[in-house]
Image 1: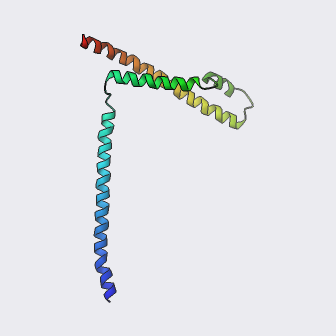
Image 2: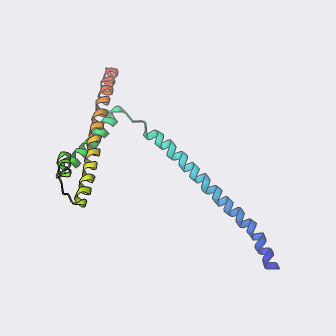
Image 3: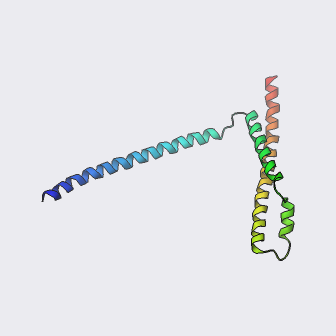
Length: 130
């Protein structure tokens, strides 16, 4: 009787609270997505060619240090991989090292290309300053 009526009248109220909570969570998530979208768009624009050159040069220094700290070269690992009778774990380790070193080598190449492109921007900047 009375308990059933109280439960029935509380149920719609609980549903409304749950709906409000879900609506608020969706609005917050939407606002966060929009903030991330705006921030991501801002990150795609470089501050200046000077800053891009500095960042790329620093990144190149870090990658060069990583490469210099490795015991073997990419070529050494490729030569070792071609040897017959490698244990499966050694083969897996070599494939991993080769993959990492190839990625680093590609990054160095791309950074040099970007720095070359930015050197044209530097020349343009100097012309505008004169």
